[in-house]
Length: 100
Image 1 (tube, rainbow, N blue to C red):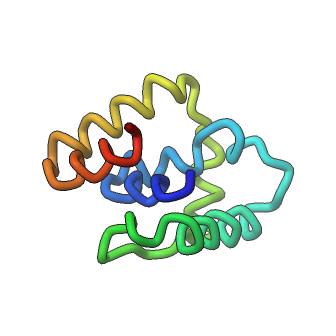
Image 2 (cartoon, one colour):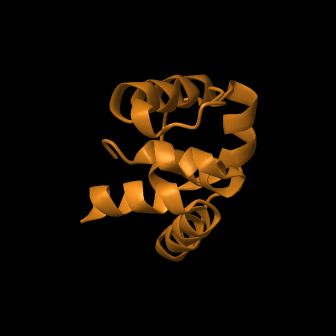
Image 3 (cartoon, rainbow, N blue to C red):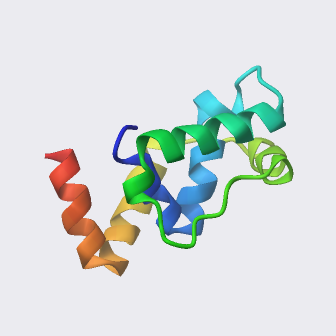
């Protein structure tokens, strides 16, 4: 997650994925604490990867997304990152450095 999770916020699907992924969507924390935790993680461990127009997750947004957990996170993660890379070659190069 360090130096990488912020890339997901470069697409709406990626933003949703961070909350819908099983470890988050099924966590025993209430929605407001999930929002606070995810926002903290993003600005603490992946601030350089966040889009310039980043807006923090809200409790309402988290509640809505957690109600629709991701059923195939591995496949969805690949699709999202491939789309982000296709839409932005500069981001693709940055992501490749982190992955390699």
